Every structure is written in structure tokens, then in C-alpha cells.
Length: 305
Image (cartoon, rainbow, N blue to C red; front, side, top):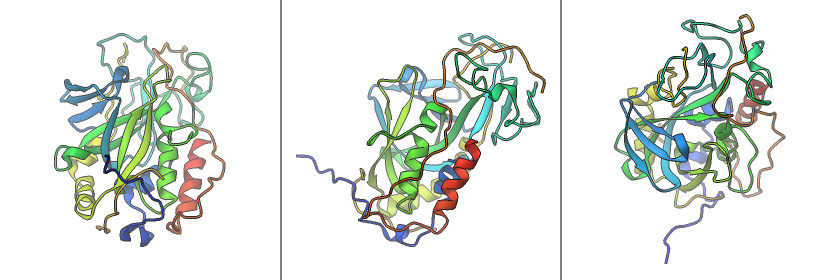
């Protein structure tokens, strides 16, 4: 018989009741690299990468992790060349904050991302945009929280989109957690592949609250150099290779403190572009969150326009 306890949003930990959102919650809901170890979702398989080499592939279609830090902004990358397996040249243009090209970009396409011709629907394959979204998370494995902090870089399909039951992309998942006044770093998160998607796409599900000791470890891990490196954009760490360039379990923990260029060819569509969300409906048993929750949600919507 299973000992797993269903997550009860009304059974709130003391650190959540304090109404203080963590840096992870603010980073994801407020908008919503570089470590040597990372998790790749290439080919619809969880792959553990160390120093650019695949060291393990996970057979299961899910992976349980704790999100310990997150990039505060959704980044952008644009490749001018044709897809070619094995080539890891840098993109022609990229932005760590999704607002303007990085000063190191070889071929900036515009002065701002908002006015960029590569940010127009149809500039990529079909109706997609040639410039792609991504967001970086720093995670640890649930069964090895004292182990390595790893980077997880998510494409647009895994970030944006509507929730359907327990199937939540990152943005919807962050909103679900912040509606309870907590962040994703307060729970074990199950990453699960959408088996109906034509390209790798993840859903996020809260499995259980962390206990007090685990939460302390999560906070400590989120403040390490490895976590900072994991959420920092470094264009060399990518799986895209181009030429020319209330459902969790347990009792919750206590708080611890350019000029237009030719249309590029891309190998696959990253999926739905961000859309302005309607006001979320919160259940009556959900505890009151921090006073800045609505501002955080509105700030995410503002970045989508």
C-alpha cells in the first residue's frame, strides 16, 4: 500500500504562513548560465551532462527534483545558420534578459528585443518566431539533495502555455505555488514529459512539501556559486547546434532565511509564444500569499507583451 500523502494546499508550513516569497518564487512569477553539470531533455529523454559529455540517460519519463534557484528573466537566442548535428557554434544574437541584445553578440538583430524583426510571428518556420525563448533553473535531485546543483534550460513550450488539470508549464506552475504564498523551492517538483508533444516539452507538478531539514538544504544550495552559474546564460551550453555561429505530499518546512536578415532555418518549433493570462482563480482553501503576489503576476504578464 502506498505511503504517499496527497498534497493539501490548506496544510501550509510555517515559513509559507509568514507571507514571504523566496527568490525562486519572485524570479519565476515575477517574469513569469553556466554550471558544468546540467540536465538535458534532448530527444524527450532526461540526460545528465557533465562538462559537455553525457554521463547518464534516465529511462523514466519523469524526474523528481528541487528547484533551488531560477534566472529572473526569460532569455532569447537567434541563429542565422542552418541546423547541423554536432556543430556548437554560438548564436548570432542573444539576450540574457529578453530586453536587448547582449554586448557580446556577434550580429545583433535590433537595438531591443521588442522591436526585433526576428521576434515577429512568422519570422521562423511556419508561424513561429526565429528568436527563441529559454529560461534556466538550478535544480538538485530529490534523492541526492546534498549532491551537485545542475542546470536545466527550458524551451518556450515548457515555460508558457495553459494549464490543463495537473499539467502545468513552468509559468503556470509558478503561479500555482505563489498563489499559496510559497515558491517551487518549498516542494519536490516532478518534471514530466508531455508524451503528446512533437518536441520535448515538460510539465511541472508539486509532489510533496520539503521537510525542515530539506528546505534548509535547498536554501543553502540556491545560494552557492554552482547555482548562480546554472542560472547564468552562457551561449556555449545548449542542445541546439547550428552552423555559423493541490498535488504534493507531507508536512511543510520552517523558513530559512539590427537590420533585418534572411529568414533562418530551424530544426524544430519551440512551441507556444507567451500570451497574456487571464486572472487566476484560487481555491477557498488556499492560504493568503504575500502582499506582492498580484504585482509579481502582473509583472510577468507585462514582459509577455
